[in-house]
Image (cartoon, rainbow, N blue to C red):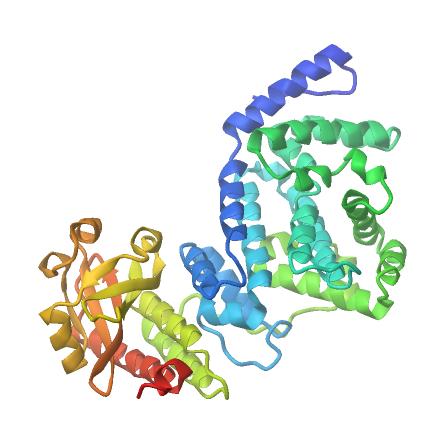
Length: 474
């Protein structure tokens, strides 16, 4: 299935081969699934009050991604205070929603590519991915110093830099012989190869319906010859990174940073940040960074990482300690604490879904406010009757569990969770029901598990007591 686009082909043969390659990539390529996830991540509004919950829900569906985020949040470089982070929601708060979202986009893209590439091409892919990530990391940092800076600029520059070399990467996947031949010819005729790379990606990106600004900044774009354009910026940054990775020289990058009012010390700090974040987040790719680069930017050997093999009990203990630390802060964000409690419940109990139920003002129903898991988008905003069962449960303020079939849920909710067991943990203040956690999984909840969840419920109640929303009505 490999398509040969050797330099010896006639123009007609080249155009025909190019069309065949584009068809193969569009029809059989796995990247569209990655771009779908990328678009989902980008659709999360950082200013929305539930953005942390939305991002945490996406990350928690992928064990590998969850572990990478926690690993980074517990590393010396990103968490110099050493305060242990055990929940993704806390990691997002610590590292920032934008940064975590960019890491999730990177991991989604990298995972797809690494699974697809044949073993003999992995080393070459590693070098392409590491240089792409380094460009993206530096682009994000430079965007912060851009004279016309806007909040969305950092992410736009990050993604454009990350995808800059996607043409070479796709050739490596689908026609490695062509990439080898083109890169040999590139030494003599660089403009021809740049033109061919862009021609390939222009067609593929059109097939994938990716945004025009992203397409215009890809390698070889005609826009790169327009001074002051974003495409020209990406091309210059890429050349500087390549010079640094291949020769250990920082001349181009130093000149580039100086245009933003930054010094060589600033550059060294960002190079170290790029290397360390890649090491923490994607060590498989980071190992392909040159030894010279590791020497120049220092080592992240004194790392703190989250254990992959910790038991459920160990995780719960760490989570309780982390939530307690959040409650000790002068200004407690009760929504973030509730999210941390929900994540702790989900991972400790190994649930498929955990929701927060909030009473309607008329006390006739409970609204599914938000949650974590596979089905939140299906049930978010729906209502559950506040019947005698819930009245007794809030009055007793104890955990309850049982089959979904026994509940008086609306058919559209009950039908979604048939065969599941659910646990409800009611939150009552002075005998008044203010919220409830609802967890679902395929096997029954034990009495011992319900006792452990009681500890998390009490932490959630402390957060609610401290919250301004409830302090006025108590």
